[in-house]
Amino acid sequence: MTSKQSLCIATVILAFAVIFGAFAAHALKPILAEIGKADVFDTAVRYHFYHGFALLFVGILLEKKETKFLKMAANAFLIGILLFCGSLYCLALTGITKMGMVAPIGGVSFIIGWFLCAYSIYKS
Image 1 (spheres, one colour):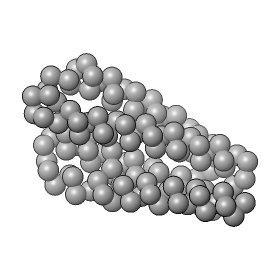
Image 2: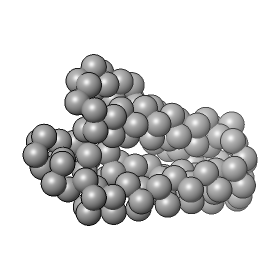
Image 3: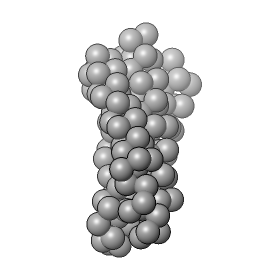
């Protein structure tokens, strides 16, 4: 992933984090509270934001020096957002508990992304 791609994707991801958070706080609040999944949705939004900013951070680093490890980190963060946050959103909205089994794969992707960032910074 290039710097420009990372920055563009990050800003869109962050916009959706705001949309999902607002939607949950207003339109979905009573539904999520009734089914007891407000905390699951909140966790998804929180990690969506954290790793959207991580992707933005990597995009800025890529502008300074493009390395294969930073590119891999950007991809890891994107995969983590899709798998971790996506599975939690799906779990909260549908109640399909098997979706929870996908979340750890996304979580591992987040961890890999952070270690790839650290390694890239260390090597530069």
